[in-house]
Image (cartoon, rainbow, N blue to C red; front, side):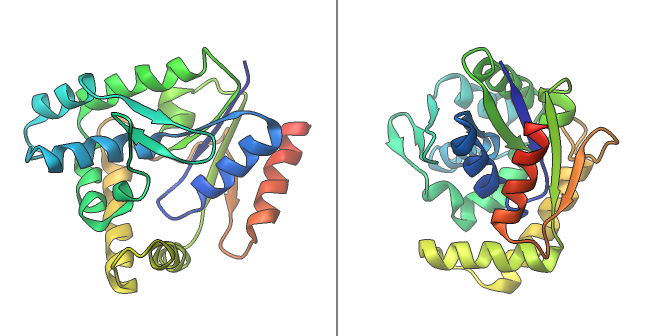
Length: 215
C-alpha cells in the first residue's frame, strides 16, 4: 500500500488539494482533522469540557466516524460535514486535539486506514507521528493572511457566520496550539517536500504533488 502524507496549518488548502490528489490517483482520502472535529462536536452536544480528558477519550471509543472519498463526514451515521466546520467547534477542537490519550487512540484508527487501501492522509502530524515512513511526505503552507481569506470565503459559501478578523485570530491561535502541543505538534522536517501555496493556484499545487509522486 502507498501512503501520501500531507501536513500543514489550518487554511493552507490541505483538504481541497489532498482530496483532489486522491481522486486523480485513485487513492482513499483521509481528513484527520475532521476526525478530531467530530469528537469536539460530540463533546459540545454532551456538555463535556475539554479539561475532562478521560470523558473525551471515552467519547471516541463509543462513536463511529466514517469518511467518504467525496469529502463527507459521518458521525454515528449522521452527516456532520458542515456542522464540524462551525465556529463553536473550531474554537474547541485545538484544545481537544491536544489531549495525549486521544491522539494515541486516533493514531491507531488512522493507521488502520493504511491497511485497507492506498491513501492520501492530511493533518498536523501525519508525516512525523502517524506515518513517519510514508512513501511521500509534504508540508503545505501559506501566509496567515492568505489562509484567513480562504477560510472566510469557505465559511461564506457554506453559510457559516464569521468575520475575516475572527477567522484570522482563530487561525493564529490554532497555529500556536498546533506547533506547541506536547504530542503530535505541527513540525517542519528536512524530509518533507515544502510547498508554499500563497501565490499558487490549486491546480498548480495538485500538479506539483502528482508530478513528484509520479517520479
